[in-house]
Structure formats: C-alpha cells, structure tokens
Length: 106
Image 1 (cartoon, helix red, strand yellow):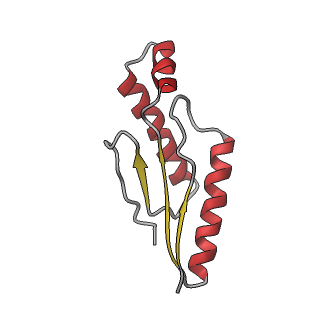
Image 2 (cartoon, rainbow, N blue to C red):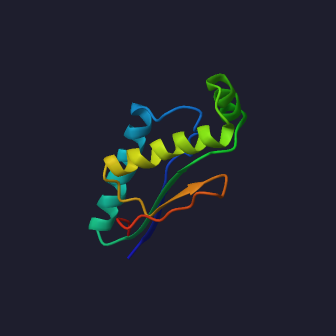
C-alpha cells in the first residue's frame, strides 16, 4: 500500500470562494478518491489563510471587523467543501483557531 498526501493551495479569505476554488477542490478530491480506490492510504487536506494584509484591507473596505470578516469567508470555504461532498480528511486555518476534521475522510 502506498501512502499519499494531497493538499490544495491555501487561499486567502479576502473574498468568497469562486469557481476556480471549486475546480481545484474537485480535482484534488478526484485524485484522492482514485488513490483510495486503488487501496492507497490517502490524507487529503485543505484550508484557508486567515492571516494576510489582503484580508485586513478587504475587511476595512467592507466596514467589518477583520475577525468577523475572515470567519464569515472562511465559513463559506468550508460550506463549499460540504456542498461538493469532498472527502477531505481535515481542514487547517493558518490562524490556528479553526481546525476541523471531516468524518468523510480516509
């Protein structure tokens, strides 16, 4: 059995996710499912980058507190993963405040 680690880019949460994010997540998920189907041990992980100047500037432009803005948009990324039925083993937050583990993972 081969061990495989798959990750996506860690996007800034200065805006809601768009179709490009969905495409990347689905492509990574297809690879993870394929490798699991071959009997490989797979860890598929994604997440968000909550710490960036882009996030601060976008929150200020929206007139919202940075933490509230980041949490709202990070939640939209998590919801996208759920809507796409991803088999992600876990998500990470670069802020260290929002780790989660999906029950759908391997």
